[in-house]
Length: 262
Length: 220
Figure (cartoon, rainbow over the protein chains, first blue to last red):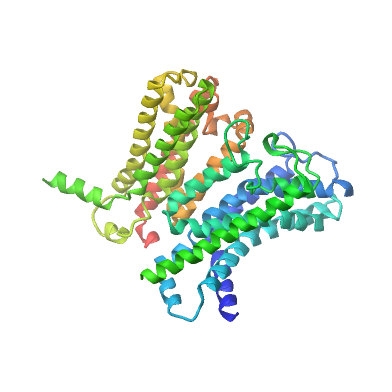
């Protein structure tokens, strides 16, 4: 347990101290804040418009769905070197010589990378929700609708992305993974199925559209995807969790294979 | 003899993934074009490969071109100038992308896919070259500015995705800085200005990269 919490704390601390993480998130925070608080055509703030209590859940869902367009790209690209760098710097070899078990290492590394990707975004979305409530632009219930939407829409997408970003670069060059991942994110989430064969609209869609439509009354679908049922949303979450667990399991097996070969 | 050893050294130290990966993607798109039979779909795929995929690959690979080198410290101890390194590393990536784009155009031409909606022969080249140059310059400058390859890769990837996702808005409000104007709106009256801005911006970013690369202590 102490080994787990040690690696977890170290991973979170190390990731959060990365200059690149704050620059990347900072650029996107500025971009989204400008869109949120500028009048049309640049943004969507209409003067005098107040988000009523009945609309809060829908707005929170839409807000977090919009965050899932670009933020997972940052999380995926930045998490991609978290396990690889342990090999590059020789840390993994050292860890192999300690009683630390491999599954504990993989789980702690994963949760650490996930937490450090989610934390800045969570603080920012809560800041936005609080600010909107304080200036009277939104009803106070925004303050609990946003964390709920964060949990249902953002966390599963990030959990999926980070799991694959830790595992895949172990079997391919980092630059290749980053290209494939960026292309994948656009192809699997935003290309309309009518235009080109895609995973968009299937249970493997990690954009959060299922949860947004079902739990947050989203009437609009991205690129004309059909409206989903609660069973679809639960199945989507289950598929994403299963895929993430499978990626981590394979990573664990692969690390074992590397340790045996060393 | 000296040239031969120099070429041999370049080949031995060359990162092979920046060669096989663009070729793999080229092969993938060749297969997709062969599978798809409808002329309009074939044109869309050809346009997507040239206008979107080639720039993305060029941008992210360029982020790794200079700094992702185990012998970087050794290289800095030799009298190789910054502009030489930049030209050789980024130039090589652009050359591979250019070769892939030419081969793909020959292939689609052989299949009878008409690329003329994108313009004449020269304009078609600008459709893929300018976004590729821009993203490669951004990836290189980002990696050198952050002293981290990941930073450059993120910048190239994020700009690519933002521009694709917000293409309607950018076409209306910021067409001069829109990477994909040539591929999405080849008859736009602002295209010449857009191409000038993209080229000028790329040169400025490469200049910044050159200035950053001269400060070698940042990367050790």
